[in-house]
Image 1: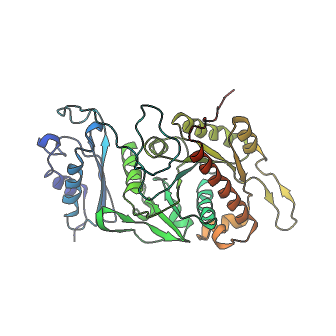
Image 2: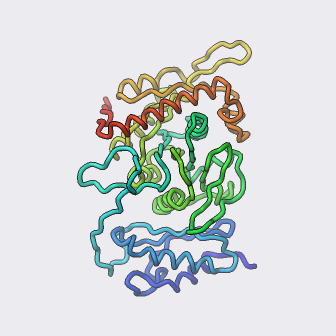
Image 3: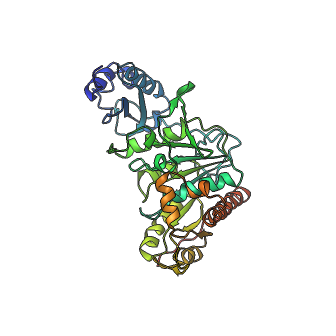
Length: 385
């Protein structure tokens, strides 16, 4: 069977008519770069934002014809918004869909602001974010999710780092997700967590060279086209920084709040402030700050060393008026179990570090509960001097 090529896919897509049944989506310039990996095709179709719902059949048709190509195992096709696209289509103002009833996510929208549609069955969505890489955000996300599970909640975990997905390794999960009825994907599972990651769909060595619209589409599909089932909370491991993925999650997903991870030193805190400011601007509550790599206890002498300083995240939390969730030490055990895919909360549930993560999870869930009880609570006033 010949390898599937970009040209084969584009030729097949020429059979899909464009908006208003004029031309085809390829010659109209609506198809993005086509990415192919392990027999799976990924691309987006650019349409006017206000016509996205109306043009959903066009997306379905494109997905169908690509899946008919011999050698194609699956197709991930998304509509992306560009108001300059399809100039012949007359713009029509349509309201965004409201969130499903009974979904107690975060704060209610401000007056006149459209509600963000929730995820059926998911009670709360928590983003774990950092201003920069290298602060242990993904390790914190995994252990936080496991700690929430240990505290009695049903938990899912979404790896939103498209460029550097780490959940397959951190949770020792291999294989590919299976597609079930209704175009839904069954999430992978380990340690009692339901997990979805781009790392399950693309080989570890493959470089993801995607622009913003593709990232947005992939994230929303991994959120809304996965059979999460009934979850109390979905933890989202965000990529570092304040780019397209963060804005997509903050602006289009009803986040219950964000947990910010930082190390103690000033350089990391400077970047953490940027993440805090971003969530504030898009009206997402900051549930608190975690100080990771807070201190080191020498295993031979028991002596404590503040390698990266100490207490910087706590002071920052106090300064801006958000909760301080806890200090996680720098230990060989966290590094070794993360590399081995056996996170400490799961492999050493009675250990001191697991106790710290469970305490952080309890404080985080308490903040989510407070946000639900007092949905009019004011956002923290972040002042930069």
